[in-house]
Length: 284
Image 1 (cartoon, helix red, strand yellow):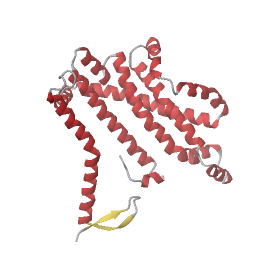
Image 2: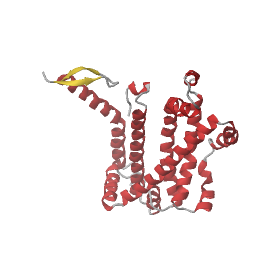
Image 3: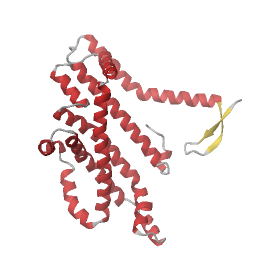
Image 4: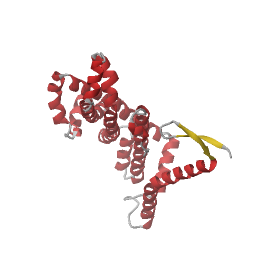
C-alpha cells in the first residue's frame, strides 16, 4: 500500500503513514475545525433568524445576509479596501512603534536602576488609566490626522509590552545568567544570547495583548475624530441611520481582528519553535 512519510509533532521522522491513517488524520482535522466554528455558525444562524422573525425592526438588527451583501458591495466599490487599509495602517504602525519602544523601555527598566526609578511611577500610574481620556489633549496638540490617531494607539499599546518585558526579564532563571557569566559572556552577549531568548515567550504574550488593543484604539479614534477608516465609516452610517452599514463595520472589525490574532499566534509558534510550548497542541 502506498505510504507517506510521517512526522512527529516535534518534526522528527517516525516512519511511513499509510493512506487510511492519513485519511483518518484529515477527517479529525476537519472535525476539529468544524467544532471550533460551530459557535460562530450558530450565532450567524440565530442572527439571521432573529432579524427575519419580526421580533426586532430592521433598524435595530438588519439580517446577516444584508450585512454580507453590504460588505460585498463596499468591496466592489473599493470603499472596503480604502477604509480597512487605513485602519490597518494606523493600527499596525502604532503597534510596531509600541512593540519596539515597549521592549526597549522594559529592558532599560529591568537593567538600569535609574530608568526604573524614573519610569516605574509613570508606568504604575498610567497602566490602569483609561488612556482615551487624553484624546482631547492629543487633538488639541496634533489635530485629527493620522499622527494623532497613531499617537493614541502607541500610548495605549505600549503599557502591556513594557509590563510583559519587565516581568519576562526578571523571571529569567538565575542559573542561566550565572552559567553564562562563568563561561565568560559579557553584558552584550548576556543580553542577546541568554536574557532575551529566555524572556521571549513572556514578551510575545505582551505583544499578543497589545495587537488587539491597537486595532480597538484605531477604530475608536476613527469614530471620535472622523475621516476615512472603518470607525469613521461606521459613524457616517450611524449619522444617516444606516444600521446595515454600522453592522457591516462590526463584522469587518471582527474578521480583521481574528486574522491579526491568528497571524500573531502563528508568528509566536515560529519564533518559539525551540520552546517547549511549540510541542503543545495548537489552538490557532
